[in-house]
Figure 1 (cartoon, helix red, strand yellow):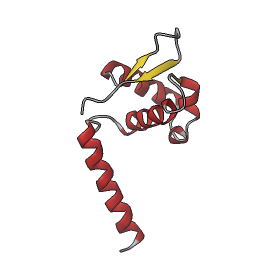
Figure 2 (cartoon, helix red, strand yellow; figure 1 turned 120 degrees about the horizontal axis):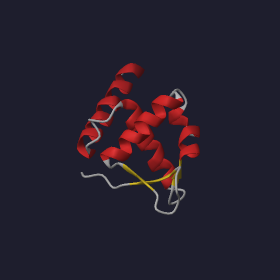
Figure 3 (spheres, one colour; figure 1 turned 120 degrees about the vertical axis):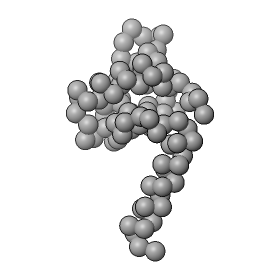
Figure 4 (cartoon, helix red, strand yellow; figure 1 turned 180 degrees about the vertical axis):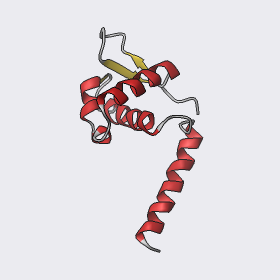
Length: 97
């Protein structure tokens, strides 16, 4: 099996998991922000915008695209603004899987 074949198998597995979790309707940037938020939320209860912007998954995402996708995730219910802070802090909501 070539490296590309292995990568294709991993990609299919990832796509299947995303479908099972209801993430298939999110854009690639929305998914990456959601993944980053989940990753960062394991370290603390709230996820800061600055932490998300600095995350490895956001390396190639422009600020305007990031903030549009973040707003979309909040409106779709994947993230919520934290009740503990006025702005810039989000909580990850459980998926409807």
